[in-house]
Amino acid sequence: MTTASSMKKLPKAERRAQLLEAAQEIVREEGTDALTLARVAERAGVSKPIAYEHFGTRAGLLMALFSSYNELQLATQREALASCGKTLRDVAGILGEAYVRCASRAGPEAGAVFSALSGTEEMDEFRQTLRNGYLKEYRDAVSRFVDLPADIGEPVLSGLLGAAEAVSRDTAAGRISYDDAVAALTELFTATLERFRR
Image (cartoon, rainbow, N blue to C red; front, side):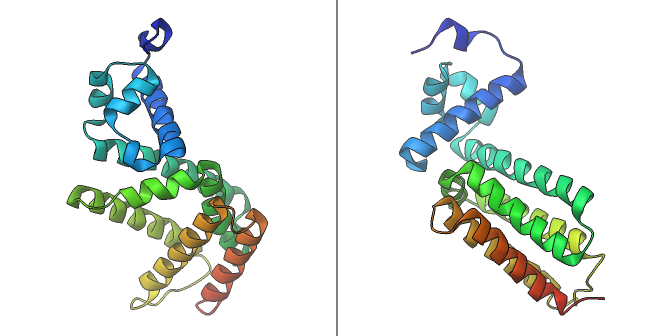
C-alpha cells in the first residue's frame, strides 16, 4: 500500500537506494524468481513507472542490485589495500577478506542475484565485465610483488577469483565460518602467488 511518506519526492539517489533495498528484501524473503519491477515498486510504496524509470527492465534491476554489492566490496578492498597492503601475504589476506566480508554482509541473496544474471547476452556481458574488473583489481594489487607470466597469469588470477567466489558462497550460507574462510583464502592466494614472486 502506498503511503504519503513513501511517495514523497526524494532525490534520485535516495529513491534508487530505497528501491534497491526493497529488491534486496524480496530476494532475501522469496528468491530471485519473485523479483519484478512491479513487486519492487509495491514493496517500496511507489508507482510502477518510478521503478521502470530507475531500472528499465528486470535485467537492469538485477544488474543494479549486484552492482551495489560489487561497489561495497571494491571500496572495502581498496581502502584496506591502501592502508595495510605492505606484503604479499597482507595483500592476499585483504583480497580474500574483502570478498568474504562483502558476501557475509550481503547474505546468500548476493549469490542468488549473481546466478540470476545469466540467460541473456546483456547480462552475460555484465557478468564478464564484473569479472574483468575484479581480475584487474587483483592484478594491480599483486603486481608490486609478483611477475605473472603472460600465458598463465590471467588464468591464475581467474582461479583465485573463482576460489574466493566459492568460499564466500559457503560462508554466506553458513557452511564455513568467516575466520576459516579468510584464513583459507589467505593461504591459497599466498601459496599460489609466491611461486611468481619477483
